[in-house]
Length: 389
Image (tube, rainbow, N blue to C red; front, side):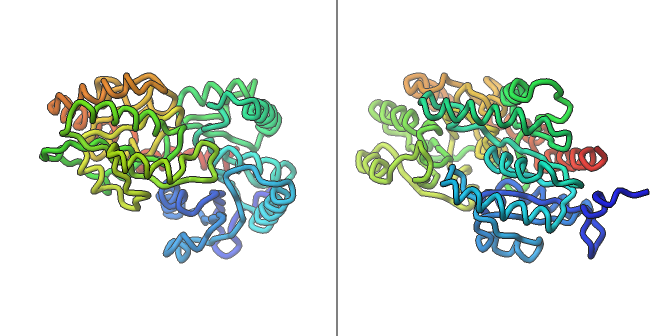
């Protein structure tokens, strides 16, 4: 006899199992989860997207059912968070998804709280990067980190809750947090990259070599070290340009102000092109792509750069070292070390044949390990395991 709670996890009109994506921002869904949602739909799932700003999904709204929930990335007031919890719980109760795919640490915790007593649905917590909370040494961050780890340990004991991380260090961390039983905790290396949309191209043949920083303007992304390295290199040579492609993020606790960026431009250290929707021309115009971040899940920008055939320079931290492999497709530097960063960048600037070789190998690496096709199939296989139980 069929379990009635299981039956509710199928769309009543199509009898397809429902996957509900919970994503704070529409633009993140478009860049990191749209391909997976399309693959899930092609595989026979009914896909629902819950996000805070559905109007920014554009034409995607015509392909999927969309629900508006006012998620925010940072921790809001108690009344605000209770309101989000209520709307999220109502969304899950009404749609009865077979799988709730929660993207980010905060949304995973909210979904876990909502679903504790809801039968017939399983939860996939996608910990996409542990970020400022796990890199900051401030007392408030340490206290919050302790509370989050304790909360996760309790919530993830639920047999219907699964977890996914993007790199080996986060996998070990979540194993320690979770305690006994690791069968429902897996590593999937990022969200993949469309290797056809980001094709390989040869290094540009121009007098001025460009070094590209493709990230939001945050201290945690290593932007201060990047600017200091640029300042040091420019003082010795005039054949290199440093370009920052990323938007301001004033809500983030490590945000850089626009006035500070403008002072760097006025100084002549960097060019800033802001947030760019199509990064392909920038990758193709760069000789080196650099991300000296303090910690990542698995940075999609470096995946895109490697797919484009560009050598990488990144910090030897979780996430970055997954895609930037020393002497294979890039070079690693110590975190928060602008002197080492400058010296490493100059090593590549002085050896364009090495840049070309690293870029070619990076393309092969992405094709074999990080294509969207491969990553999406890993998630689809996981969905099947979760439904079976």
